[in-house]
Image (cartoon, helix red, strand yellow):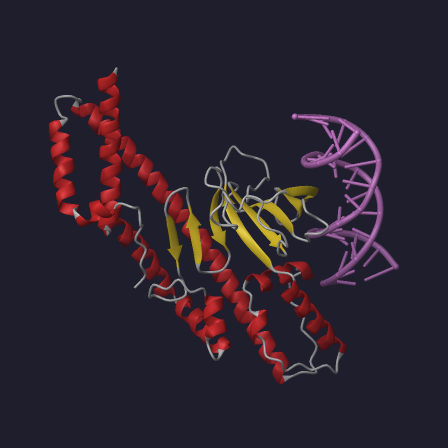
Length: 338
DNA sequence: CGTCTTTGACCTGCGC
DNA sequence: GCGCAGGTCAAAGACG
């Protein structure tokens, strides 16, 4: 079962759920004479609208994540079948895909899933194609590429992603598949630090920035004392990390963190790559995990679970009630001060 | 004055 | 070989 409950740090409310409901209700009654019912209602409606909008945003984010995961899973399957085909027919040159995708792009996609470490040693060195393929794979292992999504304010048109590191912009280009320009950054510690990143707005959602990191920093995080996570943006940043591409991903807000493990129905924090690495036979494990998630039943089940968990989860309800009552109480306190 | 950003030109890889 | 598209360079300008 997928556990999508939000740990909103409201444990007392969770334990005293029924008591809370009564308390909130009684609070409403007690506050009745002080605040007109109309104000209460409008405030509640306003809060409800806000929560609905938030819920909608979360759903959109989840959709984006699922799409990314599906795309990646397909690429893994494609890659694995390609590797299997090569192992069975070593002399056959690598068939070029129909698309006009460039080499660097396919590198990015392959590295995102980090499956290169699990490839078997069987490799034909007789042909040039195989040699270049081997070299290419070595390069892929060398440079770690990851993709991170940041949600920004719709009004924010800059391509700046505050991830804690210092970057020097060295180029900008309009690409064919996306009307918004792509910005190229180098780590400011370059040339000692070889890390580069590309930032471009998502085609689907212009408020989402897609940052593609190439390489690993060979120096400590500049804000390591402030930041709790090197990959997540500072909490005071207005951007929200939607998570990196791997299917087990975190949606980070300034407050709670929702971790969605799409690899299996049971709750597990283990990433699929780690699972594959730990498994004695990595490829069947990954394929099985992919098969599990592939079914449309699972997809719809997942969405239903998310929705019902949010609506049924007492902690979510309690959080909502607490937020609403808190708002009202705050409003009352403010009113009483005036 | 040093650092950073901007932006047009150039380089490189790939498909036809 | 040519054209296209992505990636990089480097001169010029902005800014503190």
